[in-house]
Image 1 (cartoon, helix red, strand yellow):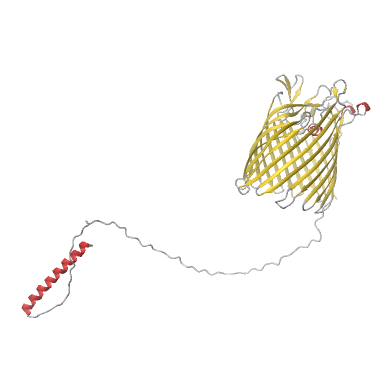
Image 2 (cartoon, helix red, strand yellow):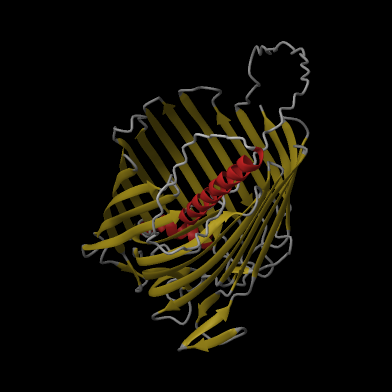
Length: 577
Protein backbone atom coordinates (compact mmCIF):
# COMPACT_ATOMS: atom_id res chain seq x y z
CA UNK A 1 0.00 0.00 0.00
CA UNK A 2 2.87 2.36 0.72
CA UNK A 3 4.47 1.83 -2.77
CA UNK A 4 1.18 2.71 -4.46
CA UNK A 5 0.90 5.97 -2.45
CA UNK A 6 4.39 7.12 -3.52
CA UNK A 7 3.57 6.51 -7.17
CA UNK A 8 0.39 8.58 -6.77
CA UNK A 9 2.31 11.64 -5.42
CA UNK A 10 4.90 11.63 -8.25
CA UNK A 11 2.28 11.44 -10.97
CA UNK A 12 0.34 14.31 -9.42
CA UNK A 13 3.44 16.55 -9.34
CA UNK A 14 4.24 15.75 -12.96
CA UNK A 15 0.78 16.72 -14.10
CA UNK A 16 0.86 20.03 -12.27
CA UNK A 17 4.20 21.01 -13.85
CA UNK A 18 2.92 20.16 -17.32
CA UNK A 19 -0.19 22.23 -16.84
CA UNK A 20 1.77 25.24 -15.68
CA UNK A 21 4.07 25.14 -18.72
CA UNK A 22 1.17 24.83 -21.10
CA UNK A 23 -0.55 27.81 -19.59
CA UNK A 24 2.55 30.01 -20.02
CA UNK A 25 3.00 29.00 -23.65
CA UNK A 26 -0.61 29.75 -24.47
CA UNK A 27 -0.31 33.15 -22.87
CA UNK A 28 2.45 34.17 -25.16
CA UNK A 29 0.61 33.09 -28.27
CA UNK A 30 -2.91 34.18 -27.38
CA UNK A 31 -1.96 36.73 -24.86
CA UNK A 32 -4.52 35.48 -22.30
CA UNK A 33 -3.86 35.29 -18.62
CA UNK A 34 -5.48 32.44 -16.59
CA UNK A 35 -4.97 32.44 -12.88
CA UNK A 36 -5.84 29.30 -10.96
CA UNK A 37 -5.79 29.23 -7.23
CA UNK A 38 -5.53 25.66 -5.86
CA UNK A 39 -4.13 23.91 -2.89
CA UNK A 40 -2.22 20.75 -3.72
CA UNK A 41 -0.58 19.26 -0.71
CA UNK A 42 1.85 16.51 -1.37
CA UNK A 43 2.49 14.35 1.66
CA UNK A 44 6.14 13.99 2.50
CA UNK A 45 7.83 10.89 1.28
CA UNK A 46 9.20 8.44 3.78
CA UNK A 47 11.02 5.15 3.54
CA UNK A 48 9.35 1.90 4.34
CA UNK A 49 11.13 -0.05 7.05
CA UNK A 50 9.58 -3.42 6.12
CA UNK A 51 10.40 -5.52 3.12
CA UNK A 52 7.58 -6.34 0.75
CA UNK A 53 5.99 -9.73 1.13
CA UNK A 54 3.19 -11.76 -0.46
CA UNK A 55 0.10 -12.25 1.68
CA UNK A 56 -1.72 -15.44 0.63
CA UNK A 57 -5.29 -15.01 1.71
CA UNK A 58 -8.33 -17.12 0.85
CA UNK A 59 -11.25 -15.20 -0.30
CA UNK A 60 -14.36 -16.25 1.62
CA UNK A 61 -16.99 -17.94 -0.47
CA UNK A 62 -20.51 -16.85 -0.08
CA UNK A 63 -22.99 -19.46 1.03
CA UNK A 64 -25.99 -19.78 -1.15
CA UNK A 65 -29.18 -20.73 0.65
CA UNK A 66 -32.19 -22.17 -1.05
CA UNK A 67 -35.29 -21.60 1.01
CA UNK A 68 -37.84 -24.45 1.24
CA UNK A 69 -40.76 -24.06 -1.05
CA UNK A 70 -44.02 -23.77 0.76
CA UNK A 71 -46.35 -26.24 -0.89
CA UNK A 72 -49.97 -26.11 -0.07
CA UNK A 73 -52.14 -29.16 -0.35
CA UNK A 74 -55.83 -29.19 -0.30
CA UNK A 75 -57.13 -31.29 2.65
CA UNK A 76 -60.38 -33.14 2.51
CA UNK A 77 -62.17 -34.12 5.71
CA UNK A 78 -64.73 -36.89 5.76
CA UNK A 79 -66.71 -37.72 8.86
CA UNK A 80 -67.74 -41.36 9.23
CA UNK A 81 -70.59 -42.37 11.42
CA UNK A 82 -69.74 -44.54 14.43
CA UNK A 83 -72.18 -47.21 15.45
CA UNK A 84 -73.39 -46.95 18.98
CA UNK A 85 -71.74 -49.35 21.42
CA UNK A 86 -73.82 -52.31 22.42
CA UNK A 87 -73.71 -54.03 25.78
CA UNK A 88 -74.78 -57.62 26.01
CA UNK A 89 -76.58 -58.29 29.22
CA UNK A 90 -76.02 -61.82 30.49
CA UNK A 91 -78.56 -63.06 32.92
CA UNK A 92 -76.19 -65.76 34.15
CA UNK A 93 -72.70 -67.06 33.44
CA UNK A 94 -72.17 -70.28 31.50
CA UNK A 95 -72.97 -73.25 33.63
CA UNK A 96 -70.21 -75.06 35.43
CA UNK A 97 -70.84 -78.71 36.07
CA UNK A 98 -69.99 -79.81 39.58
CA UNK A 99 -69.37 -83.47 38.79
CA UNK A 100 -67.30 -85.42 36.29
CA UNK A 101 -67.23 -89.18 35.78
CA UNK A 102 -65.06 -91.46 33.65
CA UNK A 103 -65.72 -95.17 33.16
CA UNK A 104 -64.05 -97.69 30.91
CA UNK A 105 -62.81 -101.25 30.41
CA UNK A 106 -59.56 -102.62 29.04
CA UNK A 107 -58.66 -105.60 26.87
CA UNK A 108 -56.94 -107.42 29.75
CA UNK A 109 -60.06 -107.30 31.98
CA UNK A 110 -59.03 -103.87 33.21
CA UNK A 111 -61.93 -101.86 34.75
CA UNK A 112 -61.51 -98.10 35.11
CA UNK A 113 -63.63 -95.72 37.14
CA UNK A 114 -63.15 -92.09 38.20
CA UNK A 115 -65.54 -89.56 39.73
CA UNK A 116 -64.89 -85.96 40.77
CA UNK A 117 -66.96 -83.37 42.57
CA UNK A 118 -66.20 -79.64 42.96
CA UNK A 119 -68.18 -76.74 44.30
CA UNK A 120 -69.48 -74.04 41.97
CA UNK A 121 -68.23 -70.49 41.50
CA UNK A 122 -67.08 -68.93 44.75
CA UNK A 123 -64.51 -66.25 45.45
CA UNK A 124 -63.99 -67.38 49.01
CA UNK A 125 -64.48 -71.13 49.25
CA UNK A 126 -63.39 -74.13 47.20
CA UNK A 127 -63.91 -77.76 48.10
CA UNK A 128 -64.31 -81.11 46.44
CA UNK A 129 -63.63 -84.82 46.44
CA UNK A 130 -62.45 -87.51 44.04
CA UNK A 131 -62.44 -91.30 43.86
CA UNK A 132 -60.33 -93.23 41.33
CA UNK A 133 -59.93 -96.92 40.65
CA UNK A 134 -57.97 -99.00 38.13
CA UNK A 135 -57.36 -102.75 38.27
CA UNK A 136 -56.31 -105.63 36.07
CA UNK A 137 -57.22 -109.31 36.22
CA UNK A 138 -54.98 -110.36 33.37
CA UNK A 139 -51.85 -112.50 33.61
CA UNK A 140 -48.57 -112.70 31.75
CA UNK A 141 -47.59 -115.77 29.78
CA UNK A 142 -45.43 -118.25 31.73
CA UNK A 143 -45.21 -115.85 34.68
CA UNK A 144 -46.79 -115.96 38.14
CA UNK A 145 -50.19 -114.23 38.58
CA UNK A 146 -49.75 -110.51 37.89
CA UNK A 147 -53.01 -108.92 39.00
CA UNK A 148 -53.05 -105.43 40.48
CA UNK A 149 -55.42 -102.68 41.62
CA UNK A 150 -55.12 -98.95 42.42
CA UNK A 151 -57.69 -97.04 44.48
CA UNK A 152 -57.36 -93.43 45.68
CA UNK A 153 -59.73 -91.15 47.59
CA UNK A 154 -59.11 -87.44 48.07
CA UNK A 155 -61.05 -84.79 50.00
CA UNK A 156 -59.94 -81.15 49.98
CA UNK A 157 -61.05 -77.64 50.85
CA UNK A 158 -59.68 -74.09 50.82
CA UNK A 159 -60.55 -70.60 52.08
CA UNK A 160 -59.29 -67.72 49.95
CA UNK A 161 -59.22 -64.28 51.55
CA UNK A 162 -57.50 -61.07 50.51
CA UNK A 163 -54.74 -61.44 53.09
CA UNK A 164 -54.46 -65.19 53.55
CA UNK A 165 -55.23 -68.64 52.16
CA UNK A 166 -55.95 -71.76 54.18
CA UNK A 167 -56.07 -75.27 52.67
CA UNK A 168 -56.75 -78.79 53.94
CA UNK A 169 -56.39 -82.14 52.21
CA UNK A 170 -57.20 -85.69 53.30
CA UNK A 171 -56.16 -88.75 51.26
CA UNK A 172 -56.51 -92.54 51.36
CA UNK A 173 -54.51 -94.61 48.86
CA UNK A 174 -54.46 -98.37 48.40
CA UNK A 175 -52.22 -100.30 45.97
CA UNK A 176 -52.58 -104.05 45.56
CA UNK A 177 -50.05 -106.13 43.61
CA UNK A 178 -48.38 -109.52 43.20
CA UNK A 179 -44.70 -110.45 43.15
CA UNK A 180 -44.96 -112.13 39.76
CA UNK A 181 -41.29 -111.93 38.76
CA UNK A 182 -40.67 -115.67 38.35
CA UNK A 183 -41.92 -118.37 35.97
CA UNK A 184 -44.67 -120.26 37.78
CA UNK A 185 -48.15 -119.65 36.33
CA UNK A 186 -49.88 -121.81 38.95
CA UNK A 187 -48.28 -120.09 41.94
CA UNK A 188 -50.50 -119.41 44.95
CA UNK A 189 -51.75 -115.82 44.61
CA UNK A 190 -52.13 -115.27 48.35
CA UNK A 191 -48.48 -116.13 49.02
CA UNK A 192 -47.22 -113.52 46.55
CA UNK A 193 -49.79 -110.81 47.27
CA UNK A 194 -49.00 -107.46 48.84
CA UNK A 195 -50.85 -104.20 49.49
CA UNK A 196 -49.65 -100.71 50.35
CA UNK A 197 -52.08 -98.51 52.29
CA UNK A 198 -51.67 -94.82 53.08
CA UNK A 199 -53.77 -92.45 55.17
CA UNK A 200 -52.57 -88.88 55.24
CA UNK A 201 -53.50 -85.25 55.67
CA UNK A 202 -52.00 -81.89 54.73
CA UNK A 203 -52.78 -78.49 56.23
CA UNK A 204 -51.37 -75.12 55.18
CA UNK A 205 -51.82 -71.43 55.93
CA UNK A 206 -50.23 -68.72 53.77
CA UNK A 207 -50.34 -64.93 53.96
CA UNK A 208 -50.15 -62.77 50.84
CA UNK A 209 -50.06 -59.16 51.99
CA UNK A 210 -49.67 -56.73 49.12
CA UNK A 211 -47.72 -54.19 51.18
CA UNK A 212 -44.04 -54.65 50.29
CA UNK A 213 -43.03 -53.64 53.81
CA UNK A 214 -44.88 -56.61 55.32
CA UNK A 215 -43.50 -60.02 56.17
CA UNK A 216 -45.26 -62.87 54.37
CA UNK A 217 -45.14 -66.46 55.49
CA UNK A 218 -46.45 -69.97 54.86
CA UNK A 219 -46.83 -72.74 57.41
CA UNK A 220 -47.71 -76.34 56.61
CA UNK A 221 -48.32 -79.59 58.48
CA UNK A 222 -48.08 -83.07 56.92
CA UNK A 223 -48.96 -86.44 58.43
CA UNK A 224 -48.92 -89.85 56.79
CA UNK A 225 -49.39 -93.40 58.04
CA UNK A 226 -48.06 -95.94 55.54
CA UNK A 227 -47.79 -99.73 55.73
CA UNK A 228 -47.86 -102.85 53.60
CA UNK A 229 -49.91 -106.03 53.97
CA UNK A 230 -50.32 -107.44 57.43
CA UNK A 231 -49.93 -111.18 57.89
CA UNK A 232 -53.03 -113.17 58.82
CA UNK A 233 -51.01 -115.20 61.30
CA UNK A 234 -51.26 -113.57 64.75
CA UNK A 235 -47.65 -114.35 65.67
CA UNK A 236 -46.49 -112.53 62.53
CA UNK A 237 -48.88 -109.59 62.77
CA UNK A 238 -46.06 -107.13 63.54
CA UNK A 239 -43.70 -108.47 60.90
CA UNK A 240 -44.53 -106.08 58.12
CA UNK A 241 -43.30 -102.62 57.18
CA UNK A 242 -45.04 -99.59 58.66
CA UNK A 243 -44.11 -95.99 59.26
CA UNK A 244 -45.45 -92.65 60.50
CA UNK A 245 -44.30 -89.45 58.85
CA UNK A 246 -44.77 -86.00 60.42
CA UNK A 247 -43.47 -82.74 58.98
CA UNK A 248 -43.78 -79.06 59.87
CA UNK A 249 -42.72 -76.80 57.02
CA UNK A 250 -42.50 -73.00 57.12
CA UNK A 251 -41.35 -70.25 54.78
CA UNK A 252 -40.85 -66.54 55.39
CA UNK A 253 -40.02 -63.82 52.86
CA UNK A 254 -39.61 -60.04 52.99
CA UNK A 255 -39.03 -57.64 50.10
CA UNK A 256 -36.77 -54.66 50.63
CA UNK A 257 -36.05 -52.61 47.51
CA UNK A 258 -34.73 -54.93 44.81
CA UNK A 259 -33.93 -57.73 47.27
CA UNK A 260 -36.08 -60.50 48.69
CA UNK A 261 -34.93 -61.97 51.99
CA UNK A 262 -36.34 -65.44 52.65
CA UNK A 263 -35.87 -68.34 55.02
CA UNK A 264 -37.26 -71.90 55.15
CA UNK A 265 -37.41 -73.84 58.39
CA UNK A 266 -38.47 -77.49 58.13
CA UNK A 267 -38.70 -80.29 60.69
CA UNK A 268 -39.37 -83.79 59.32
CA UNK A 269 -39.74 -86.96 61.35
CA UNK A 270 -40.09 -90.48 59.98
CA UNK A 271 -40.52 -93.52 62.20
CA UNK A 272 -40.13 -96.87 60.41
CA UNK A 273 -40.64 -100.23 62.07
CA UNK A 274 -40.50 -103.85 60.93
CA UNK A 275 -41.20 -106.62 63.42
CA UNK A 276 -39.69 -106.29 66.88
CA UNK A 277 -36.25 -104.97 67.68
CA UNK A 278 -33.59 -107.54 68.64
CA UNK A 279 -35.81 -110.44 67.50
CA UNK A 280 -35.65 -112.66 64.43
CA UNK A 281 -37.85 -115.04 62.50
CA UNK A 282 -36.66 -117.82 60.20
CA UNK A 283 -33.18 -117.28 61.58
CA UNK A 284 -32.31 -114.55 59.04
CA UNK A 285 -35.16 -112.02 59.25
CA UNK A 286 -34.42 -109.49 62.02
CA UNK A 287 -36.57 -106.70 63.39
CA UNK A 288 -35.80 -103.12 62.39
CA UNK A 289 -36.67 -99.84 64.14
CA UNK A 290 -35.51 -96.55 62.58
CA UNK A 291 -36.41 -93.13 63.94
CA UNK A 292 -35.19 -90.41 61.63
CA UNK A 293 -35.46 -86.65 62.24
CA UNK A 294 -34.16 -84.04 59.81
CA UNK A 295 -34.09 -80.31 60.59
CA UNK A 296 -32.95 -77.78 58.01
CA UNK A 297 -32.76 -73.99 57.84
CA UNK A 298 -32.36 -72.32 54.42
CA UNK A 299 -31.77 -68.55 54.43
CA UNK A 300 -31.56 -66.99 50.95
CA UNK A 301 -31.28 -63.55 49.38
CA UNK A 302 -32.67 -62.89 45.90
CA UNK A 303 -31.81 -59.73 44.01
CA UNK A 304 -32.78 -58.21 40.67
CA UNK A 305 -30.77 -55.75 38.57
CA UNK A 306 -30.56 -54.19 35.09
CA UNK A 307 -34.33 -53.72 34.77
CA UNK A 308 -34.97 -57.19 36.19
CA UNK A 309 -32.87 -58.83 33.48
CA UNK A 310 -30.44 -60.21 36.04
CA UNK A 311 -31.66 -62.47 38.83
CA UNK A 312 -29.28 -63.84 41.43
CA UNK A 313 -29.93 -65.92 44.52
CA UNK A 314 -27.44 -66.92 47.19
CA UNK A 315 -27.88 -68.75 50.47
CA UNK A 316 -26.99 -71.72 52.62
CA UNK A 317 -28.76 -74.87 53.78
CA UNK A 318 -27.99 -75.80 57.39
CA UNK A 319 -29.17 -79.40 57.88
CA UNK A 320 -29.07 -81.63 60.96
CA UNK A 321 -29.50 -85.37 60.34
CA UNK A 322 -30.61 -87.16 63.49
CA UNK A 323 -30.96 -90.69 62.12
CA UNK A 324 -28.58 -92.74 64.27
CA UNK A 325 -25.65 -90.44 64.86
CA UNK A 326 -26.47 -86.76 64.78
CA UNK A 327 -24.60 -85.04 61.97
CA UNK A 328 -24.68 -81.49 60.67
CA UNK A 329 -24.16 -80.40 57.06
CA UNK A 330 -23.83 -77.05 55.31
CA UNK A 331 -24.84 -76.99 51.65
CA UNK A 332 -24.26 -74.08 49.25
CA UNK A 333 -27.12 -72.46 47.38
CA UNK A 334 -26.39 -70.12 44.47
CA UNK A 335 -28.03 -69.44 41.13
CA UNK A 336 -27.77 -66.65 38.59
CA UNK A 337 -29.63 -66.06 35.34
CA UNK A 338 -29.63 -63.21 32.84
CA UNK A 339 -32.17 -62.31 30.18
CA UNK A 340 -30.85 -61.40 26.74
CA UNK A 341 -32.83 -59.84 23.90
CA UNK A 342 -36.13 -59.65 25.80
CA UNK A 343 -36.06 -63.25 27.10
CA UNK A 344 -35.05 -64.73 23.76
CA UNK A 345 -31.96 -66.23 25.44
CA UNK A 346 -31.55 -66.80 29.19
CA UNK A 347 -28.21 -68.31 30.29
CA UNK A 348 -28.11 -69.65 33.86
CA UNK A 349 -25.71 -71.38 36.22
CA UNK A 350 -25.50 -72.34 39.87
CA UNK A 351 -24.61 -74.85 42.55
CA UNK A 352 -26.65 -76.50 45.25
CA UNK A 353 -26.81 -79.44 47.63
CA UNK A 354 -29.12 -81.02 50.16
CA UNK A 355 -30.22 -84.01 52.19
CA UNK A 356 -33.05 -86.17 50.83
CA UNK A 357 -35.03 -88.09 53.44
CA UNK A 358 -35.90 -91.49 52.02
CA UNK A 359 -38.98 -93.23 53.42
CA UNK A 360 -40.66 -96.58 53.00
CA UNK A 361 -43.40 -94.81 51.04
CA UNK A 362 -41.05 -92.94 48.67
CA UNK A 363 -39.02 -96.09 47.93
CA UNK A 364 -42.17 -98.14 47.24
CA UNK A 365 -43.33 -95.52 44.74
CA UNK A 366 -40.08 -96.04 42.82
CA UNK A 367 -40.19 -99.83 43.00
CA UNK A 368 -43.30 -101.46 44.42
CA UNK A 369 -41.65 -104.90 44.49
CA UNK A 370 -39.36 -104.05 47.45
CA UNK A 371 -39.11 -106.04 50.66
CA UNK A 372 -40.94 -105.05 53.80
CA UNK A 373 -37.74 -105.16 55.86
CA UNK A 374 -35.93 -102.53 53.83
CA UNK A 375 -32.87 -100.58 54.96
CA UNK A 376 -33.59 -96.85 54.77
CA UNK A 377 -30.76 -94.32 54.49
CA UNK A 378 -30.88 -90.60 53.80
CA UNK A 379 -29.38 -89.50 50.48
CA UNK A 380 -26.61 -86.91 50.93
CA UNK A 381 -26.10 -84.69 47.87
CA UNK A 382 -22.80 -83.00 48.71
CA UNK A 383 -22.81 -80.66 45.72
CA UNK A 384 -24.42 -80.25 42.31
CA UNK A 385 -23.01 -77.93 39.67
CA UNK A 386 -25.36 -77.01 36.85
CA UNK A 387 -25.65 -74.58 33.99
CA UNK A 388 -27.31 -74.09 30.66
CA UNK A 389 -29.25 -71.80 28.39
CA UNK A 390 -32.94 -71.61 27.61
CA UNK A 391 -34.98 -69.38 25.40
CA UNK A 392 -37.38 -69.04 22.52
CA UNK A 393 -36.67 -69.41 18.81
CA UNK A 394 -40.08 -68.13 17.73
CA UNK A 395 -43.36 -67.40 19.44
CA UNK A 396 -44.23 -71.08 19.21
CA UNK A 397 -40.85 -72.79 19.72
CA UNK A 398 -38.71 -72.82 22.85
CA UNK A 399 -35.70 -74.83 24.00
CA UNK A 400 -33.49 -75.66 26.96
CA UNK A 401 -29.97 -77.12 27.02
CA UNK A 402 -28.25 -77.90 30.31
CA UNK A 403 -25.56 -79.93 32.04
CA UNK A 404 -25.02 -80.98 35.65
CA UNK A 405 -22.44 -82.73 37.78
CA UNK A 406 -23.46 -84.14 41.16
CA UNK A 407 -21.82 -86.06 43.98
CA UNK A 408 -23.99 -88.34 46.09
CA UNK A 409 -23.43 -90.36 49.22
CA UNK A 410 -25.90 -93.14 49.98
CA UNK A 411 -27.35 -93.08 46.47
CA UNK A 412 -30.24 -95.57 46.52
CA UNK A 413 -30.29 -98.50 44.08
CA UNK A 414 -32.53 -101.59 43.85
CA UNK A 415 -31.05 -105.08 43.53
CA UNK A 416 -32.61 -108.56 43.61
CA UNK A 417 -32.71 -110.11 47.08
CA UNK A 418 -31.48 -113.70 47.51
CA UNK A 419 -31.78 -114.14 51.27
CA UNK A 420 -35.28 -113.35 52.56
CA UNK A 421 -37.36 -113.70 49.39
CA UNK A 422 -36.29 -117.22 48.46
CA UNK A 423 -39.55 -118.08 46.68
CA UNK A 424 -40.38 -114.58 45.47
CA UNK A 425 -38.57 -112.11 43.30
CA UNK A 426 -38.23 -109.01 45.47
CA UNK A 427 -35.75 -106.18 45.75
CA UNK A 428 -33.72 -104.73 48.56
CA UNK A 429 -31.78 -101.49 48.83
CA UNK A 430 -28.11 -100.99 48.04
CA UNK A 431 -26.39 -97.65 48.74
CA UNK A 432 -23.17 -96.33 47.26
CA UNK A 433 -21.16 -93.13 46.78
CA UNK A 434 -21.60 -91.98 43.21
CA UNK A 435 -20.82 -89.18 40.76
CA UNK A 436 -23.49 -88.48 38.14
CA UNK A 437 -22.90 -86.33 35.06
CA UNK A 438 -25.96 -85.44 32.99
CA UNK A 439 -26.52 -83.70 29.67
CA UNK A 440 -30.06 -82.67 28.83
CA UNK A 441 -31.75 -80.97 25.91
CA UNK A 442 -35.41 -80.21 25.32
CA UNK A 443 -37.52 -78.41 22.77
CA UNK A 444 -41.20 -77.62 22.71
CA UNK A 445 -43.70 -76.39 20.13
CA UNK A 446 -47.08 -74.88 20.91
CA UNK A 447 -49.60 -73.35 18.52
CA UNK A 448 -52.22 -71.74 20.77
CA UNK A 449 -54.27 -74.55 22.29
CA UNK A 450 -54.32 -76.67 19.13
CA UNK A 451 -50.92 -78.37 19.08
CA UNK A 452 -48.45 -78.98 21.90
CA UNK A 453 -45.30 -81.08 21.52
CA UNK A 454 -42.47 -81.61 24.02
CA UNK A 455 -39.27 -83.58 23.34
CA UNK A 456 -36.76 -84.20 26.13
CA UNK A 457 -33.45 -86.04 25.77
CA UNK A 458 -31.10 -86.91 28.62
CA UNK A 459 -27.74 -88.70 28.84
CA UNK A 460 -26.45 -89.88 32.23
CA UNK A 461 -22.98 -91.07 33.14
CA UNK A 462 -22.51 -92.88 36.47
CA UNK A 463 -19.33 -93.52 38.41
CA UNK A 464 -19.96 -95.65 41.52
CA UNK A 465 -17.27 -96.28 44.11
CA UNK A 466 -18.12 -99.88 45.10
CA UNK A 467 -20.22 -101.17 42.20
CA UNK A 468 -19.58 -101.82 38.54
CA UNK A 469 -22.79 -100.09 37.44
CA UNK A 470 -25.59 -97.95 38.81
CA UNK A 471 -28.06 -100.82 39.01
CA UNK A 472 -31.42 -100.26 37.25
CA UNK A 473 -30.64 -96.60 36.50
CA UNK A 474 -30.99 -95.55 32.83
CA UNK A 475 -28.13 -94.11 30.80
CA UNK A 476 -30.25 -92.71 27.94
CA UNK A 477 -33.72 -91.21 28.37
CA UNK A 478 -35.98 -89.78 25.65
CA UNK A 479 -39.48 -88.46 26.36
CA UNK A 480 -41.98 -87.29 23.74
CA UNK A 481 -45.34 -85.80 24.68
CA UNK A 482 -47.90 -84.36 22.30
CA UNK A 483 -51.47 -83.05 22.22
CA UNK A 484 -53.63 -82.17 19.23
CA UNK A 485 -57.02 -80.47 19.42
CA UNK A 486 -59.09 -80.69 16.23
CA UNK A 487 -61.97 -78.19 16.32
CA UNK A 488 -62.38 -78.91 20.03
CA UNK A 489 -64.08 -82.10 18.91
CA UNK A 490 -61.25 -84.63 18.68
CA UNK A 491 -58.45 -84.65 21.23
CA UNK A 492 -55.38 -86.74 20.41
CA UNK A 493 -52.59 -87.42 22.94
CA UNK A 494 -49.24 -89.09 22.35
CA UNK A 495 -46.84 -90.26 25.05
CA UNK A 496 -43.56 -92.01 24.21
CA UNK A 497 -40.79 -93.06 26.57
CA UNK A 498 -37.43 -94.56 25.64
CA UNK A 499 -34.77 -95.77 28.07
CA UNK A 500 -31.53 -97.62 27.48
CA UNK A 501 -28.31 -98.63 29.17
CA UNK A 502 -29.89 -100.20 32.28
CA UNK A 503 -28.25 -103.17 33.98
CA UNK A 504 -29.39 -105.42 36.80
CA UNK A 505 -27.23 -107.19 39.36
CA UNK A 506 -27.48 -111.00 39.09
CA UNK A 507 -25.55 -113.77 40.77
CA UNK A 508 -24.74 -116.19 37.96
CA UNK A 509 -23.69 -116.16 34.34
CA UNK A 510 -26.29 -116.32 31.59
CA UNK A 511 -27.69 -114.64 28.50
CA UNK A 512 -26.71 -110.98 28.12
CA UNK A 513 -24.69 -111.27 31.33
CA UNK A 514 -21.15 -109.91 31.66
CA UNK A 515 -18.64 -110.13 34.49
CA UNK A 516 -17.42 -106.71 35.61
CA UNK A 517 -15.10 -106.34 38.63
CA UNK A 518 -16.39 -109.54 40.21
CA UNK A 519 -20.09 -108.68 39.65
CA UNK A 520 -22.49 -110.23 37.14
CA UNK A 521 -24.33 -107.52 35.22
CA UNK A 522 -27.32 -108.33 33.02
CA UNK A 523 -28.50 -105.99 30.27
CA UNK A 524 -32.17 -105.21 30.80
CA UNK A 525 -32.82 -104.17 27.21
CA UNK A 526 -34.28 -101.04 25.71
CA UNK A 527 -37.60 -99.59 26.85
CA UNK A 528 -39.88 -98.33 24.06
CA UNK A 529 -43.24 -97.50 25.59
CA UNK A 530 -45.65 -95.75 23.19
CA UNK A 531 -49.17 -94.76 24.25
CA UNK A 532 -51.79 -93.14 22.03
CA UNK A 533 -55.16 -91.73 23.11
CA UNK A 534 -58.14 -90.34 21.17
CA UNK A 535 -61.17 -88.62 22.71
CA UNK A 536 -64.33 -87.61 20.82
CA UNK A 537 -66.50 -84.94 22.41
CA UNK A 538 -70.09 -85.52 21.45
CA UNK A 539 -71.10 -82.37 23.29
CA UNK A 540 -70.00 -80.43 26.36
CA UNK A 541 -71.29 -83.13 28.67
CA UNK A 542 -70.56 -86.46 26.98
CA UNK A 543 -67.46 -87.84 25.29
CA UNK A 544 -65.96 -91.19 24.31
CA UNK A 545 -62.29 -92.18 24.48
CA UNK A 546 -59.94 -94.94 23.34
CA UNK A 547 -56.50 -95.46 24.88
CA UNK A 548 -53.85 -97.63 23.17
CA UNK A 549 -51.09 -98.63 25.59
CA UNK A 550 -47.72 -100.13 24.66
CA UNK A 551 -48.37 -99.77 20.93
CA UNK A 552 -44.97 -101.32 20.15
CA UNK A 553 -46.11 -104.47 22.06
CA UNK A 554 -42.78 -104.68 23.88
CA UNK A 555 -42.64 -106.87 26.97
CA UNK A 556 -39.68 -104.95 28.29
CA UNK A 557 -38.38 -105.46 31.83
CA UNK A 558 -38.66 -102.36 33.97
CA UNK A 559 -37.11 -104.42 36.77
CA UNK A 560 -35.17 -107.66 36.47
CA UNK A 561 -37.57 -110.56 35.67
CA UNK A 562 -40.59 -108.23 35.72
CA UNK A 563 -41.89 -107.90 32.13
CA UNK A 564 -44.79 -105.53 31.52
CA UNK A 565 -48.10 -106.19 29.84
CA UNK A 566 -48.10 -106.22 26.03
CA UNK A 567 -50.40 -104.23 23.75
CA UNK A 568 -53.56 -103.06 25.53
CA UNK A 569 -56.76 -101.27 24.49
CA UNK A 570 -58.77 -99.25 26.97
CA UNK A 571 -62.03 -97.50 26.06
CA UNK A 572 -64.95 -95.80 27.75
CA UNK A 573 -67.05 -92.67 28.25
CA UNK A 574 -66.95 -89.45 30.26
CA UNK A 575 -69.88 -87.49 31.68
CA UNK A 576 -70.33 -84.05 33.19
CA UNK A 577 -73.31 -83.41 35.39
